[in-house]
Every structure is written in C-alpha cells, then in structure tokens.
Image 1 (cartoon, rainbow, N blue to C red):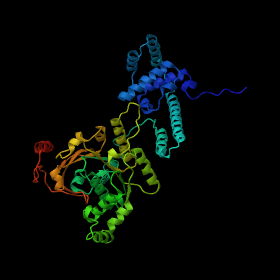
Image 2 (cartoon, rainbow, N blue to C red):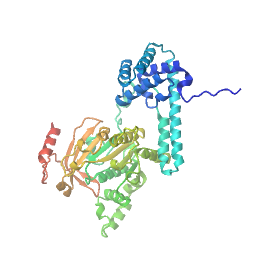
Image 3 (cartoon, one colour):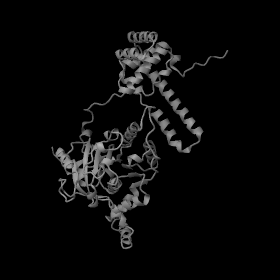
Image 4 (cartoon, rainbow, N blue to C red):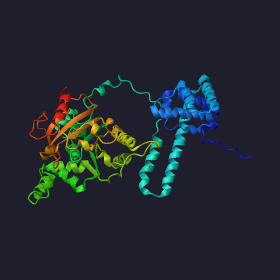
Length: 474
C-alpha cells in the first residue's frame, strides 16, 4: 500500500490547535505580525473562523498599520459580519484563542515564517512562469523584480539599536559623506552638498533649468577631488529621458570650457574648444570620461526598479556610482500597484520611495527633479505645494530645493532658489535670490542679494514674493 502524501500547501497539515496558537501569536506578539503581515494569506488557514479573524487583522494593518487587539477584533467581527450565527462562532473562537496557553511561541513563529515565505516564493515563481509563457523579453526586469521581492521579504524581528553604541563613529567628521553641487552657497546651506544615502528633490517649472542644473551637479561631482574619493572624482550615473545625447554632451563641454553650449559649434569657437579639451581642460575631460556614465532610455519605459537592476549590473561590471541623477521624475515608468486600489498618485509615492531605497541600499546621493505645476510658471517663488501629483513625492525627500524665475528673470539669466527641506541639519540659508544661472555652461553665480527687488526687473508678484521673504527672515 502506497503511503498518502501530506498536503502541505495550507496550514491544515499542522492541525487546528497549531493554527489557533499561531493567531494568538499574531495578536499578542505585535512585532511578529507587523514583520510578516505582507506575506500572510488568510486562505492558508483551514478553519473558516480563523480565516475571518486573520482577514480582519490584515485589513486593520494594511489600512492603519496597527495590529488589532482582542477588543478591536471583537468590534470588527460584530460590525462587519451580518450573519448572527457566524458572529457567535467567530467570537467563540476568538475567546478560545484569548484564554489558551501559548507554549512554544518560538517554534510556532519559526514554522509560520518558513511556511509563508515558501508560499510567497511559490506564488512569485508561478507569476514568473506565466510571464515567460507570453514570450515578451521586455518583461525580464519584471520577473527579476518579482523574484527579488519574494526573496527579500524580511520577517525577522528587528531588535533595533542603542543610541550609545558607536559614539565615536557617530561623532566623526565624515559622518555624512556629502557630494557637492558646485554652487558654493547651496553647498554651504546643505553642509557640503547632498550626502550618500540621501534623496534630493528639485521642484521647478518647465524651462527653469532642471536638466542643466543636474548636469552641472554631475559634472562637478565627477571632477571634484577630495579625500573621500581618493582625489579621483566621484563616479556618476546620469540618466536622462528627454534630451538628446548630443545636447547632454554639449552641456558637459560647456561646463568644462565655460563656453555656452549653443556656441560650441561656431567655426571660430569649435577649434578652441577642441584644443581646450585636450590641453588646459584635459584633466577634467579625463575625469568625466572615467567617472560619468550616461544612459538615455525612452520616456516612460524605465522604472525605478529597473534603475535599481541597472545599478546592480554596473556594480557587477566594476562601476560603482557615488551619485545618481535621474532627469526627471515624470519620465519614469511608475511602479506597479501593490493593491488593486492603488491609484496613480499612490504609485507616485511608491516610486519615490523606491528611489529613496536605491539611495540607501547602494549608498549613493540621488538627485531627481520634479515638474512644477502650471501655476509655478513665471513665479518668483515656488513652494512644495506646486510640485505636481502626489504630495508623497516631496514628503519622502531628504533634501528639497525649488527653482523659480519670472519671464524677465529668465531673460536676464536669473533664478531664485529656495531650500524647503533639509533633514541633515539646521536650515540656515533658505532663500537664494537673483542667482545667475547659465543653462549653456550649467554654472551658478551668487549675486549676493537677498532682496527680491534688488535687481531691476518688473514683477507682478512682488507682494507675494516679499511675503515669502519676510516669512523666511522670521
């Protein structure tokens, strides 16, 4: 007689008593449930009343990030179950769970963790097989991300850390490894620049100079010699979606030669540029060649997850970036929704959170501009409320700066820069007004003026701008 094969695809093979004690662990060990909630599937419980209790727990956690107590579960059972008999049966099961002993908690939790991890990985593999069957090679990154997420689920209890551990390391001068932007006043305001592990967000309307500014940040980082980079410059990954490759190259040449990009091809200028790049600017040209990798995907065809995979491949091939520039957020393919209820604005928040995780995981400084709303055009002041789309996009940033310029300021090559958020320290110099900015050379020049009316240009918004200035002065 052949032995019967035990069905291990549900928790039923472990018995009802085990499942009841597991639910008790869920309720009474909040850290455990919080760590495993994302992969717990109530349908894996063989008892209907236990499935209902676990479903209420998951809904409570997904909605409010709170682990339901016995009282809260009783309330949910009474308020969300219409059948009186089912209510009484479920409440009876809950009471039995509450009054039962909890022996062998560690064994129960370890067994549960392994079971749900295995089920989660099985689902990921099945989803990947379905994608492979469709035969679309472009979905390779999606398969990789599905499997990675299944493997990366961390259900171990996080014991945290003690603030008094590693005092000397926390107080070291290089506790924050900042990469300068090249604009001295902004770097001073950011205590050296954007640090590795930080996400920097630039909010600016169309045509303000986001691409030129971030190209300048990249070029300066690549040619900046300091002890932190062994005097070899920082490695930079520069991802741009809309500008043509030649235009980006010319911005780098303009940065090095201080000749406007639009003039580089003039017959009387081009020979001089070529000569400079091989003589007086040869060192900078060499560093940019060695330190900068540009990548030009089509708009809307690359997600933050795919950028993460790209960085992994680059590291595997010997290029570890210190700085990542993504120009710009709205050109990214949004991350896939985590639930059926996720709207586009929710997906924007998920995407920005993914960028933050890239900065942290790979220890890179990451700049990403955001397109300002229509009402940010031609303004002297641009605030966080003028970042288009979800407010979560700007909430996540470690550093947030905004660019603003009126039409008349644009004609004179001027802009206002506001530091809206800085997690790394006290915000001192938060408004930088009448800053000269050359789109063709990607260079900023401080005119040392903190007066919105300090330069002669007409303004339809001087009252609003002055109000903002007064607010900062307070």
